[in-house]
Image 1 (cartoon, rainbow, N blue to C red):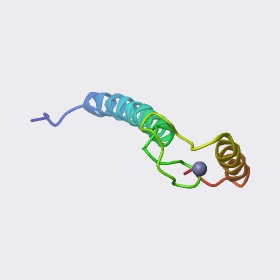
Image 2 (tube, rainbow, N blue to C red):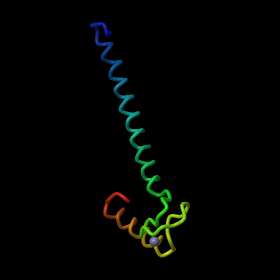
Image 3 (cartoon, protein in one colour):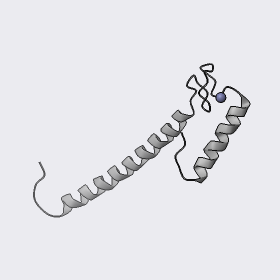
Length: 83
Ligand SMILES: [Zn+2]
């Protein structure tokens, strides 16, 4: 329970608010980074044509990898999120 009184309590609340904003920003950045990395994990199918591949492999062949990388570069240029 906060005692009503001089503005000292407000100053502390401001500092806590600033710290919380900062922590939330860092959290959002790290979540975004993890989501970007998660998209690049192998998922058992070719990221380009969805053909089944070995679990640790991301593309069925080099052509698909090149096509996919070109598409990602084009999306990045257009400002759209990668998929
Ligand atoms: Zn493929």
